Image (cartoon, rainbow, N blue to C red):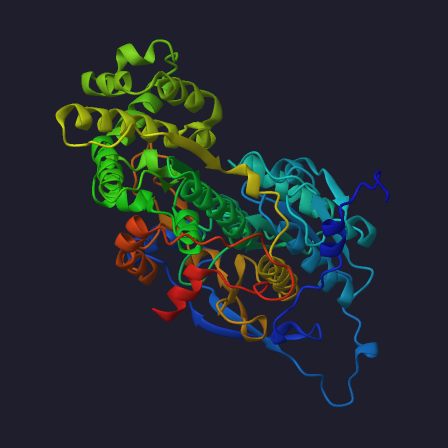
Length: 558
């Protein structure tokens, strides 16, 4: 046995997996069908979008279908021009399957003309602006096909902020003679792509700018985009861990597990995992925000659940929370806004508490010291990423323990003291080997991105729909960025892309959708009956290997 081998057996096997593509892309030749002209997602934003995106607004939806060869024509005498394409990994590109977007572009590029070149910008937008690019080769790509992470090119650490960055990007594209530039990422990344597409068009730059939806949080979601690359893998990976924890809780019979899942802006991961693993209780940020729940009310909701189970002789349980929950609780949200405001004014973390309003200072002081420190220090150093470092699960576990103690003293709770175990299932999943779904989806989107460039469809995002069905029934198309832009109306201090500006914004969980209705319908049974599901590891062949995202399938039935 070779103990020095640098590649694991599963990595090798996965690198040999050949992604499936929809019939529309088979044979490498497609026909473009133009549909209806698009307008703004919200009619109230139309004038502003039209003004800011004068050159790219109002383009039609497009669909790709298979194109048959004309009689007498064969592949040998078709010789498309050499094409040069660049690819950029955005801030959200560290998602399982992202590398397959590159593989899809590369294979389509080379199939049309083997002399065509794919450039990868190292370090995302920084690499784009500084012209730090490498030429992607087949040998280089071999070890990255169907693999997790984004380490081939590395992701961006910042957005394209201003005209200087856009001009630097334009010069890079001119220097490298790029026919197309593909942005891979989520809401922020594709917002950058939308702005760059408009800027390039206004400057008569010939480079076509297109986007691909890749973000493990699954929040780039709308009437055109059903889900994002990476979401399926992350949910399956996390659900396996939650299922294991559920069985551990059931076996020990004495612990409550508080599990926080990724999802700063939206709770799609928590919702999907709740369907795949059946925890006793799931608390979504959107639900809390809509109900204007305070920290005390969230705490009491959990306590009521614990007490109801204790009355039935059950002293264990599993509670799932979304990462962005603390910003959706009404009083902690206001506290965070005050702290952010003071930090922006240059006030030190040491002085912040004394300058808070009386109620905010009292709330901060009531929180565990660990959480106080995280609220002050993490926001100062981590920017928009601070939510990952605020341990909401530990906060709620502590508050629930204290509240149950008060109830016990009052004689309304007679069970033993709560024993809690806390987990944050965050970054563990980002480098997971992607599921077959994500491999196929990412590769298909990469191929579509190439065809968008071939047809000079500047300002479009590649889309695949009918994803609840087998790959053979997937439908391929593209949507203009401008059809997804909205003006964010949230307060300036909230955790948004840039509040008040035009952007492709995170889509919240639809509380009126069928997945939520089903969740509520089964909530009491899951709370009391321990109907846990142990999904096991992600399957790559055989039964279960082609399973679909449950919430996407449920939404397709609505």
